Length: 119
Image (cartoon, rainbow, N blue to C red):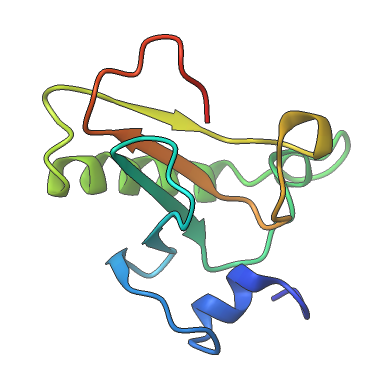
């Protein structure tokens, strides 16, 4: 896990945070600065800095991890009553993509109509 990574510290319980969901591969917490009525962060327990790092130009990718994260997102959306209505999933990648914490994480937004809004 990343030495100074805030999400790694949350995963290790060094920083307290209410977990909305947890399994062997990820945790889910509420975003401190929500961009929608429901704004959750799904964070893998393994430190991967970004989506780019998960799929390097040369080498083995993290297909299994990403598949498990997407499966968790769907379970979380059901648990949070975002389905069948719908929700948005966003992955910000690198600085220009809006990533501010360099530990791969998925934003899950919903609880309201999200037309034209981005995380």
